[in-house]
Amino acid sequence: MPPEEIIYHHPTITLADVHAAKAYYYDNLQEVGEQIREGEAFAKQMQGTVLL
Image (cartoon, rainbow, N blue to C red):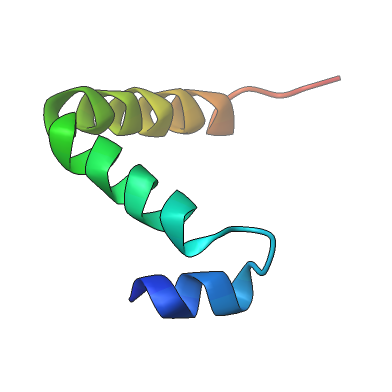
């Protein structure tokens, strides 16, 4: 999604915020990817868990 569209849908976020987030993402691809994989694994694990 282009930065302009992101701020259109989330008006409290500035264009500078979007660019800063994208810069962080590209500077930390490996770490971000690992966090995403861990989150997906946790979500899968929780799908099999019954909460009372």
